[in-house]
Length: 241
Ligand SMILES: C[S@@+](CC[C@H](N)C(=O)[O-])C[C@H]1O[C@@H](n2cnc3c(N)ncnc32)[C@H](O)[C@@H]1O
View 1: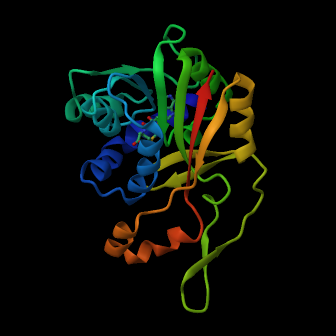
View 2 (view 1 turned 60 degrees about the vertical axis):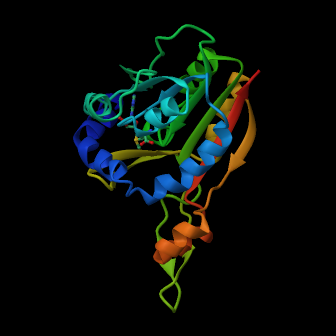
View 3 (view 1 turned 120 degrees about the vertical axis):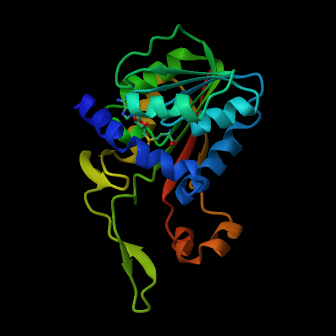
């Protein structure tokens, strides 16, 4: 199961990275604005970028003065990251995020995980490990697709406007195949499962965002205006104390 999810990322890595590399990822612009807001000033901070993918965000953090350790389970992603997104303050390591992390306790000021948690089959151990490797106090900031709405298709009204979504079996955890950049796996779990995993570690949620695109972005892409009706992402900041 776990290698299965990574294998898919190995196959789609080039497509995924190409989209980010060319600044075409409209969705990333929505959730990264909230992630950056919650990160604040990272200069001088030791940051773990978990599930770093092709490292484009890890590089952004390093350029802002953070000392960045970036980890991912996909060789293909890491190869692209090392080729495209390198920096003196940025180190890449291969690690399976469904297992224990090979870092000592209380090493990082910040752990960031963009679009990772709904891609791994099990989150409890990962979040436990995040709490272990974070300093006290420390910040864990993660973005995910919105668990309430992501898997439901839009429905249009009589004017062909995307207006509604039917929510089906929201409380059932399960795995679905997606096909954005090629086949990948999506592990649906309700919002309360994320909250319960955080609660077990003793971390507490200090910020919760359902980000929407800035107006300037919608002026460029008016067909994406439906993002103002139902949010596509959740960004959460939890604190270790
Ligand atoms: C949607 S991508 C996000 C990448 C990057 N954070 C970004 O925002 O572009 C999900 C990433 O999680 C990684 N991943 C999935 N399952 C994993 C696992 N079990 N262990 C480590 N990485 C995993 C994939 O290789 C992929 O790079």
